[in-house]
Amino acid sequence: MTLEKNWRWFGPHDPVTLPEIRQTGVSGIVTALHHIPVGTTWTTEEILKRKKIIESGGLKWSVAESLPVHEDIKKRRGNYRQFIDNYKESIRNLGQQGIDTVCYNFMPVLDWSRTDLRFVFRDGSITTKFETKVFAAFDLFILRRPDAADNYNATQIDIAREYYKNMTDQQKKQLTETILLGLPGSLEAYSLNDFRTAIAEYKAISDDDLRENLCSFIREIMPAAEAAGIHMAIHPDDPPWSLLGLPRIVSTKQDIEQIIRIVDSPLNGFALCTGSFGASIKNDLIDMTKTLGHRINFTHLRNITRNSAGDFTEDLPLEGDIDLYSVLKALLMEQKRRIDSGRHDTRMPMRPDHGHLMISEQDKAGIYPGYSLLGRLRNLSEIRGLEEGILRATQLKIL
Image (cartoon, rainbow, N blue to C red; front, side):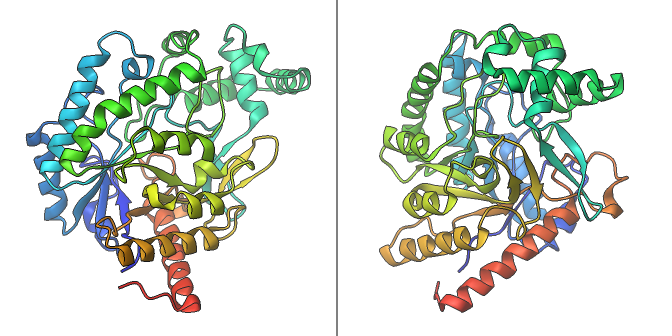
């Protein structure tokens, strides 16, 4: 046995088809019911419909990513109790159909943030990038968020102002569209006014407030997850620091340690996303994998090149700043420990995360940034080769 290989698929409208995915060599699918409004229950009927489509393609539905958390739950306002009840019902319905892993996040407003979704990499492929000065220019001079200047020092403001002054109208429009892009699986985006409103609703919510809301949410859903046999995996903030004055509470090793203590169960775990955690030079991915491995319920493997200013570019798996060799070795050691100790959660599902957009797919419509076929296939191939090399070099026997 090795880590279970999976592929993120956005459903029947995904330009990457199930027959293509099957030829990548993965055994499972990571997907979500993106057509169901956030906060609404995933019914057994809808789950079964998606499951049958996947199985007809010779694959299995391994992980639900993401079962989205409604913003009212994060703010603990409005109709949040009904949304929590709906969430628990969705968990129960997934468990009844044999889908035993759910990935979710607790990031306010934005699922993830980049400043360039079409950055031309050195080999001509297209990848994504985040630049602090560019994001600050958007925040300060395009969004014009009240009190935004409080989140930057004088030097950062001067650099952002100069960058903004040299932007064309088209560049401003493109940057706005990039930052306001919606959740993966949907190419819908916020309007600028709706975005301002969504941010303003968090003005009175501190990190501690959001952390307490997450604690309450986990305490409420875990009984349903345990009864259904669902492994919950909270995804880290991307990037793992505050943006737009919004609270962020799933960014560090200490954050994860607090989260897994809320309910002391193997089912209350996290998603090890090497790209998200790894964007911060403060996070030691090897240490996190070794010391928190017993609560890793899902893994996203990708690499980035980063700097101390908070800039990062999505790189190739074996060429970035993250030591994927050591991280993957620690994951395989954790899998061996689980097998030897008789744990049932030995599959340890993973998926190759964001891939570069190769030349042959650059004119193909509907590809969500990072989710092309060939880019992810390259990532998967390199990860599988790395995994095989580790197993042979260490003579690690995983049966």
